[in-house]
Amino acid sequence: MKKVLSFLLFIIYSLLSLFGFSFDDDRRIWTKDVIFNIESKSDIFCPDENVWNNGAEYPSVIRLSNGKLLASFEVFSKSETGFRIMASEDSGKTWKECAFVTEKVDESLNAAWNPCLMELSEKVGEYTGETIILAGVSIDPSQKIKSHVSVYASKDSGKSWDEISVVDEAGGIENGVWEPWLVYDNGYVYCFYSDD
Image 1 (spheres, rainbow, N blue to C red):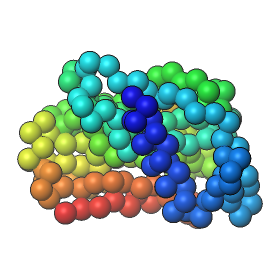
Image 2 (cartoon, helix red, strand yellow):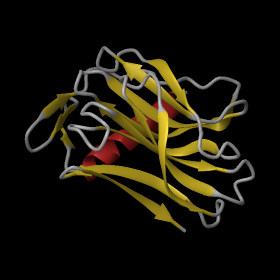
Image 3 (cartoon, rainbow, N blue to C red):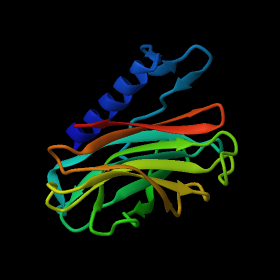
Image 4 (cartoon, rainbow, N blue to C red):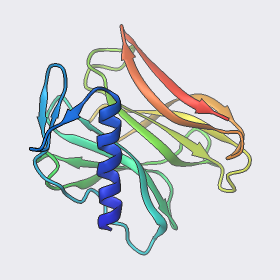
C-alpha cells in the first residue's frame, strides 16, 4: 500500500514538474507566482480485496477555489467500474469519497481510465465558474471493441455529476482513445487526448 501511495506522489510531483513547478527541501512547490506548501503525506485511497493487483493509477488532484482538494484516479475493481472522486477539506490530511462517477451515455461501456479534473474559473456556456469538469475514458468490458472520451460536470463541488459530452470514440485497447487533458483558454475548454 505504501508503494502505491509513493507511486501516486511520484506521479503528482512529476506532472507538476512538467508544468514548471519545482520543489525545495522543505516540500514546498514553487511556481512563477505562487508557493504551495506540502503539509503532509496521507492516504487518499487504500485498496481492499475487491481491487485488482495494480490498485490505483493515473491520479488527478486539484485545489478548488473554495480551498477543498478533489482527487480522482483509476481503480481496477472486481465489482464496479467508474471514477472515484475523493475530497479533502483539510489540505490533504484526510480524504473521503464524495462521489462515484459512472458511464451514462453508453451503458455498455465502463468508465475506467485516465481521469482528468479541472475547475472552471469563469462561466463557460451554461456552466458557471466553480463548475468542476472531469474527462475520462470509457471502454467496453472486453477492452477490444470500443472506447470513448467522456466529459462530466459537477455544479456542487464534486458531489454529483452529469455526463455532458462524448469528445471522440474509437476502437478497443489496440486502437482506442486515451489520456484526456483539459485546458481552459479565453472562454473555451479544450480536451486534448491521445489516440492509437
